[in-house]
Length: 114
Length: 112
Image (tube, rainbow over all chains, first blue to last red; front, top):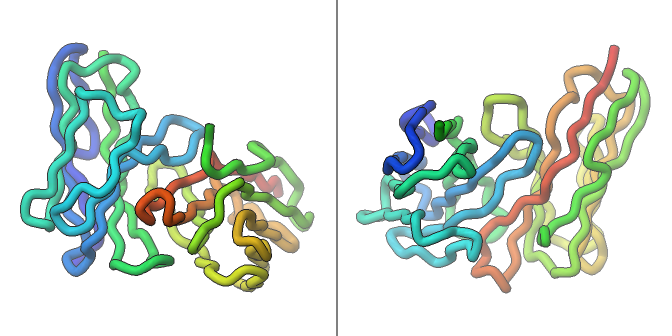
């Protein structure tokens, strides 16, 4: 296992288009997180899965954002009708169950909406 | 409003100086972690603290968890240019289904 993998690494899209990102967590990790990070800021929580169940979703997340983890393994994050304000780095992290478990991050998908 | 407030937001010091950065909240955390992030990379874990009053040392870094488990500090002794980066605290609280929330970070620059 080579760690958390995110695809694509970069995505440039026109405003109004839909985009989908994929995250492959470390295989034995049942927790999976999505964060959004803009320049100079810390990761902003978007959503969190325990296995295939989506346990928490940020109130900041509009209806245009949806995430799935259908088999409790990989996850996808879809943004519909993208806006320029969606431009950011989208980070995925996974961890084992249990509080205090280390979260391992992927290298992120950098989205630019033009 | 951030669940975790970090201060200072920016810190620029000379090599060899000591520094302390802070992470504060009004919430009680079941665990709190410190990460360091370099440009273009995801955050990497430095330490996890779970017990109120706990102090952990990692070479020149000293981490402390407040007695009430609402705050934490990171002290770096004799900073080096390799310490430059974004230092993030992250915590889990039972009020958020134990998901992990991050502060906005302290961007540290250590000049040679």
